[in-house]
Length: 288
Image (tube, rainbow, N blue to C red; front, side, top):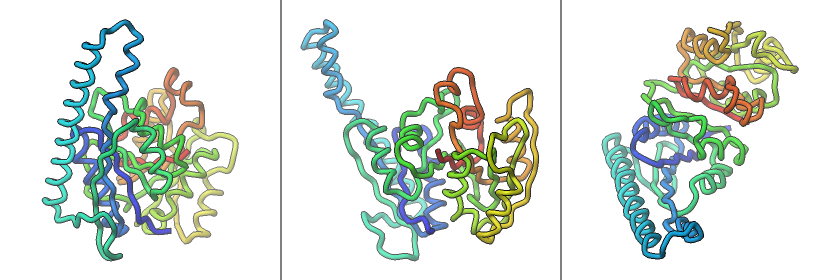
């Protein structure tokens, strides 16, 4: 299955350039269309604060301030998009003019970002999510989790610094779960065109289910040759060992399932998904 439609939510300019580069790289590989989406907060959402004892005048000031901040952020994001597509000679079009080039468009809507992104992602082949700047908690990103839990589609988490390549050398994080199987299914288009594929497995990561040799046999049915490599946790962190193994392979894409354990458990106790979300320096494609 070819990838034709890519969704790129852009909340701010902080991580936007790397995300735009990653989304455009994917679009150029697949001759796809990128829809860059900026969701403005509805200033009327501050109205419920009236029940908190605030006066009408204060609430009006808050609404005006929210509106002003939203206008400034939307203007900055649109400016970044326009500069980027101009610099990279990207065709800007609301519809794809043909099958031989990548195209892009920009849209602004008002409402709750997680609602818009999750719904639009259901009819996108891939959603690229910018990685927040260092110090921000990527594991609490509403847009990221909305796509993971509510879209049923793959998500590609862009690195903070864009990679020069994407999908040439792919690592698969495999532990036998339904989530990892869904991730492999979502990655099949990429796996079919990759130069090299490696399955990463570990006794500390494996759950009840098929093991790495069975996955390799399945991939062979799709004409994908994948080697198998075992990794070990680093300082008892399975995620650290997984990322080190992916870097050792010079992977420019890591495919993995997300949240085999509950999200709440991972947020409180930690887990492989959370560790990868917070520490990966390469593009990561996740499914759940």
